[in-house]
Length: 146
Image (cartoon, rainbow, N blue to C red):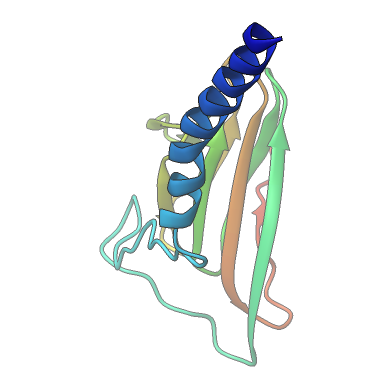
């Protein structure tokens, strides 16, 4: 009987000591944590960006691109910020210049960004979040024919 009591006390002691640091770690974390992930006054191509005239409109998109997927040739009439949550996407301009963005990358595209495609040349799905600072009636992207 004494052996069972000792074993029980040992288990309780182990649980209390092993759970202590976990409880402390949770208590040390702030209830609200705001982190600025990215700021820029310059797009990837060009010197700066401008906002379209009209009644301002903010937009947020989640873009899922499967391996082999391609967003057709297009340009933007309003500045936007993109964040690659998972995977990778390659921006290729009409003239052949390319930039690959990987998980965690953030970038700005603007009106003077040349027409381009976005392709998932990787082996896993890519997720890109896009915020657009547009105006009512201004399209997020305009497809380029041919």
